Image (tube, rainbow, N blue to C red; front, side, top):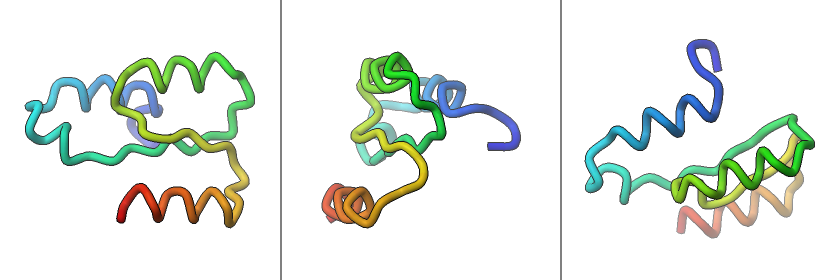
Length: 68
């Protein structure tokens, strides 16, 4: 992302009113292979799913189910 990374985005989301946060479905898509990044993202309580690039068709289907 041009102005902030994914973790900075999550911090900004935490500042939103709870009513707005409840309507978000956040899926982190990353090139990072560091398992600590997944742990850190999921620990925020905001991230519903975490996927590595390149994105597979199965991962896309999982995201589609989250949005349904």
